[in-house]
Length: 443
Image (tube, rainbow, N blue to C red; front, top):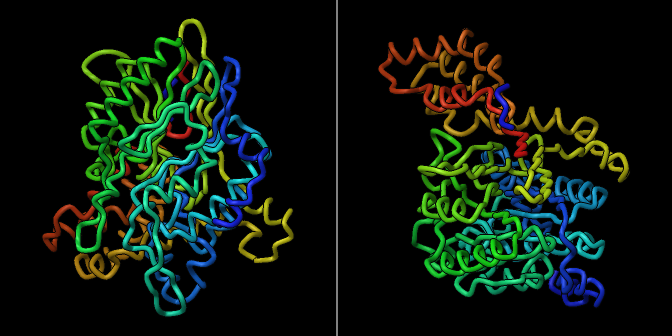
């Protein structure tokens, strides 16, 4: 491959836990180890009963394994607790659709990490605040349930970054924390939740406010003066990671932010939103690139997350990033769970993702291309999507698809029926094959 070098529970927190989260003393200068995950879309137990309507949400949910998101989250957090990194960073869309019950339940699950001395830093995503699509699912029906305001989000996740902030932006939920004296982490809130209300279009894209830019530059100057290494996390992407999915995914005015980060020596940003594991550079007219690591959704097979090691030095920092897949099977065995899907949860999950890749637009595809060619396109989607989202599609995979019968069938039927660009998304996947998206080393 091409390679580049529950409110009551929260109120009852012990004094020791609060002090652990506040980080009143900054650790001495040195390397920092960070686990980063994104787009958990955590769905609280009080939000769904596993009924028919919720199963439809799973079926058409872009491969998100929402019916198993609680064990996925539990297994992931158990791995983080065992690894004992300096910090866990969650870059937004931590809830399904901003349900207060989901936020409170997740915050309670994060608390044991805080008490164990692992600092947890949370950002909101476009799903998390003022979301009028927050529902409770029961049987074949649903009813609106309470979402959260920005102030409530901060309160719920007080011990997950906000109480530990060395600096807070007054215009948003952005904040800066010092992982140690030589590594500063900037958590940037670019969500447009202040504009969210029923009857208006749902805001997917992100944009930093003018006052947030002013705050950020002031803090970056302080970081530079202190000789520290700046690291940035945000929900939307700093640069385009897909030829098809950029509008609404790449941050509005991304070049403005990129130039500012480049000016102050930021080399790595951590993002999500896209649900696809991809590492791509933002590059200005001159200077070093800023590498944007867009993490795959933790809710999507293979349930992977990132591990980033930052080692500051006199000539600049060294970075090493790699992904790791959550081992649900080992976790379930240790927990004594007997659900048969846990026997090989990864294989089962891949099969489910392949199936879900064919559900959206299935009728339209078959009608446009006919049963034979339409079926061929659906098979291509089932084959390609899991590897593409995981950032693991190889050049050999792409060559095999291009030379295969199904690819030829779709092209032939499209020409005969006058169907425009039926392979556009598939071709964009194939063109991206072979790029290393699960490792990054900056010496």
